[in-house]
Length: 111
Image (tube, rainbow, N blue to C red; front, top):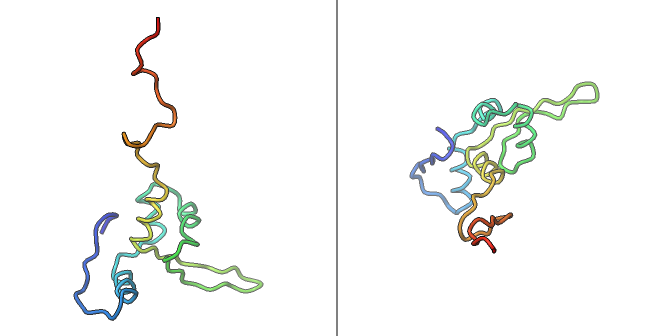
């Protein structure tokens, strides 16, 4: 499954909307840091920093102790990866939105 593909519901009835969203998140594809790094052509360290505090990311592992550092494994749900990607994209310039630096090419030359 790739970014943008939807996950189909299992068809089981759920009690309320939060249960439905939890079931949907559980059933959707979860990516590893390495998989997202490969998709976005970024380093694993950059991806880890991007997602380590993102809501919805599954963090597996312990805090460690005084003598040992903690190791964490991240599993990133597809919906979270798509949300972060949308947030980081540069928005398209549309005719309704003015340009930051309007060009003067449309104006007739002054004499």
